[in-house]
Length: 172
Image (cartoon, rainbow, N blue to C red; front, side):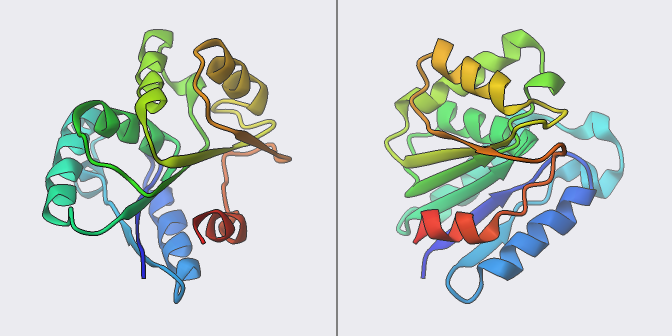
């Protein structure tokens, strides 16, 4: 059985998404959701991608003997890019979805260039009309920055990423 680390989006409603994904991954995969510190405090100012990344790296180092897959949504993709920047940890496979380019400053986008150095098999799912960053924006950005990750276009005008069957197929 392969472990999957789920890095959800920023808002508390993403906890439901992450739990849904974890439940739907069973029994094929054992999935664990990361809970952001600001969910407990209720203060969005308590969120720090750098601090979350460092805490996750610490946990990953404790389980370094097992290959880890990652499913990251929205701000979770940004935190994962920070993890990749700081940690030589290798992941088996990575699924990115809902990259929130519209929620980040353009100078923050460069963190995604860390994925150029990832040896893991990686894929990105992006809704064609996602208000946080649409398929065209993400595809163009990856192309301009020479980030060689396939971006799968999903037809949806929201930031929901309930494509569990496709996620499981990629991870299998």
